[in-house]
Amino acid sequence: MACPILQLTPCNETIRPPSKEVNDSILASESKGFKSGYASLIGKPNVGKSTLLNHLVSRKLAAISRRPQTTRNKITGICHLPGGQIILMDTPGIHQSTSKLNQAMVHTSMSTYGDVDVILFMVDAKQKFRPEDEFVLDSLKRVKTPVFLVINKIDLVPKPELLRLMDELKSRAAFTDIIPISALKEDGLDILKEILLKHLPEGPQYFPEDMITDCPEEFLVAEIIREKIIRLTHLEVPYAVAVMVESMREGQKGVIVIDAAIYVEKASQKKIVIGEKGALLKKVGSQARTEIEKRLGSKVYLNSFVKVKERWRENVRYLKEFGYTHGHH
Image 1 (cartoon, rainbow, N blue to C red):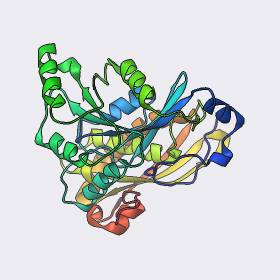
Image 2 (image 1 turned 45 degrees about the vertical axis):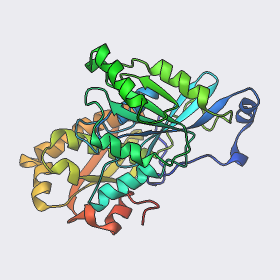
Image 3 (image 1 turned 180 degrees about the vertical axis):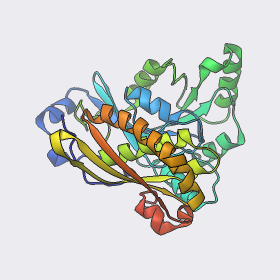
């Protein structure tokens, strides 16, 4: 089945479908104690937010890498449950930042505080509570939204150590609840869903059951390509890469033709991304195409090219063009 070709818009807004377009089944759900609401996943970089989002919606939406700051926009995933719907927003890691790109990412995260019904503040059990976590917690001080502390990666620490950490964190803030999980091993996720659903208000089924994200396909395709580059390159290259899907159209025999521009900041980085005789770009293309085909359920022809935009991470015009500064001035 061919994918719908959507207009490209950055996936960094909270989108609530207009109520007048809500169909009869949605209206019926409101009157039967159906619960629905928005939850924001926040925390320092690399704490497992994207892994949790992907496991809760049971489908890969967010780019994942061991490198911090992989997520650059708010990505909305929809977790469908019997009697409820949790709309999850995976946000960039919150950190003290100097570059304009990093400042825009932090602004994106903090701007979700007032948009959501609950906030999930994630920490890494293995790394304990560090100054970076303190920085995130400070940003929550004046927030009226209920904050749940989610301690991730509990499979990596002995139980007594975990209990000590839970005790220590309990005294730091008035969390609505503390939930230990392992997102990767899916340990504790059922309890997390149950607790979240209990705290969400009664409301409509915002999205149909076959929908797991409100991000345009172009955005998700660009994220898949960017993730492959992050995994296959090192040093400063992963941080200097942006991907824009310039067009997505149906070609002959239902093949989806995708033109993607990969932007870097220096000619030397362009050389690295292309690789010896084009080997690295070919590898990126092949790995990305396999995943995109799985996602779209169609054959894909991926045409990717590398361009240099010098110091784009410091240029507000480029940041806007790449969708990183929506609503940020």
